[in-house]
Image (cartoon, rainbow, N blue to C red; front, side, top):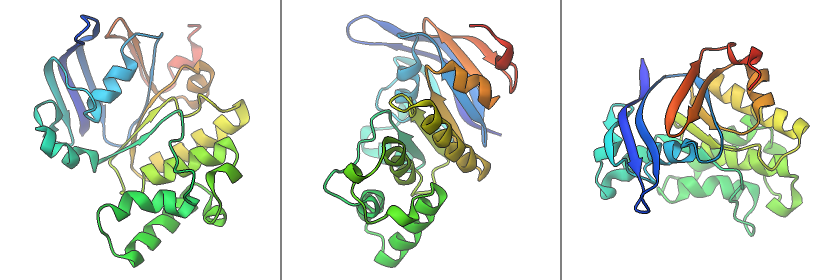
Length: 231
């Protein structure tokens, strides 16, 4: 069953740059999908349209049964609650503890403290950081900071987790740790769409791979197919 369906999506920025054109793509619930391609191929625009930071110029984007492309700005929160986003830079609150960074996403919804505590501890356990809950970001290594960002992104139990170059600032071993965490989250049922430049990671993971070029899907590799590609 599909979670994401894009039909004839086009995005033209005010500068005249055509970032995405005639994009047709379906991603099913529970999939782990990599999106790769050279700089300027449309990867970032694609994911920005998924969580409605950008609106398509034309075409249809349906996410979890909701037509994202037609949502009023005042209703965007409805789709954001279903999506977690992890960026290359961790975007953590430096003066807040690990616990506070993760809890923040729930506090703005006014949930009871007991419920917040339960969810925060569960998320930190999932990313292996329960014992670092009282630490501050500057007391953590880069990989640990990214795991905090992941815990924060999954705190609402999102149907979709979007990862924009989450290993871009990390070394190879730490990148493997982050991918292992993401794979565990995926096994629990969360759909993951991850943009990356690291093709070695993509080959090792043996997941579905969407190769973009000039705003289009150049090739859609099924699980395991990309491992033997030389590109």
